[in-house]
Length: 417
Image 1: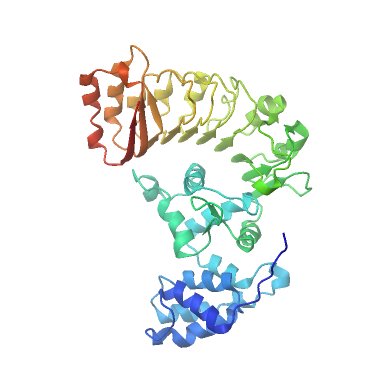
Image 2: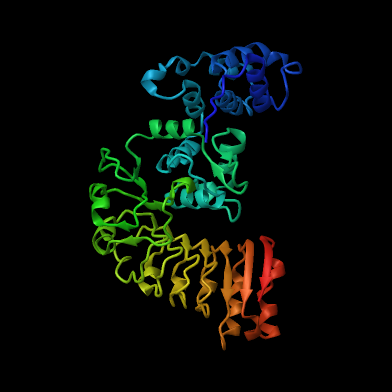
C-alpha cells in the first residue's frame, strides 16, 4: 500500500483545530481575551495537527489568561528536537499533566506502537499498579474511568481506533513521548531486539512472533529484581504472519523465573498452552491482577486463594476449567471476575458472600443441588455492568427472590439461562 505524507496545516486550519480543543469554538471572535496569546501559541505549533490538539486540550479547562501566557512563555518550547527526539509541544502537554495522570500515561510506554486496547483493559492494569489516588480507589463505581476520560477527551493523549470504535490507540509520537519521559521504570521486549536492561525496571511487557517461548527469551527478566508487571502482548494484526493460535512457554519460566519475581502485581499468561500452576503462587503475595485467558488450565489450586490483594481475575475462554477454587471467599479484595467463554464450569463454590468488593461478575453458574447458593449474591451491593445467571432450573422461587437484583442499580444488563 502506497504511503501518503501529509503537509503541515495552514495557520488558519491549525488555529481552527486549536480553538476547537481549547474553547470548543471555531475561532476566537467570542473570546477576544485569548485571541492574541492563542494565535501566538498556534504559531509555535508550526502547523502540526497533533500539537495543536494536545496544547488546545491542555488549555481546555484553563480560564485564566495568565496561565495561557505561562504556556506560551514556557522554556520547553525551546528544547532542540534533535536532543529530546520528540516534538517539544507534546512534551509541554505532558509537563502540565497532574502527577496521577503522568503515571497513567507513561505506563503506556510498555505497549508497542499501533497497539489497540479497550478502556476496561487499561483501567484494570492501572488499578493493579496502584496508580489511583486513595479517594478514587475507594469509590464503588467509576474507578479509573475519569482518568481515562481525562487522557482521551480532555487532553487528546489517546484516540479512538479507526478500525474498531470500541478500541483506542495512541499516536506514534505520543508513544515516543511516553518512552522518552518514563526513564528506567518501564521497558518492553520486541522480538530479538537487543537493548539494555536495568534492575530498576518495574513494568515490562513483551511481544513476539515466536510460537515457542524458550527460557532464553526471558533472560533479561532475571535482572529485573523489582519487576511488578509481566505482560505478554499480541502483535498488531498486520504482523501476525503466520498467525498462531497456540503459544508454548518454557516450564523453566513457570517453575523458576516467575516465583523469583516476588514483587509482581500484574501477571498475565494469556494464550499459552499451560495446564497446571500448582506451585506458582507461593511467593507472589503482592499479585493484584491475574489473566489466564485462553489457556488450558484445568485446575486452579487453592493456593491462589492466599492472594489477599488480588483485585482482578480473568479466566475468559478457559474451556478446560470445570470449577473455581473452593476457597474463593478468601479473595476479599476481588473487584473483577471474568469467566466468559469458560463454558465447562459446572457450579460456583460457596463463599461469594465474602466478596463484598466485587463489582464485575460476568457469570454465576448454579450447580445441581446448589440452588440456595444464589442467595450469596444478595450482599454483593456493588455489582454492575452486564451480568448472567446460568442454570436457573436449579433454583426455587424463594431463593431467587432473596437475591433482590432489582436493588442493585449498577447492573446494566441481565441474562438468565
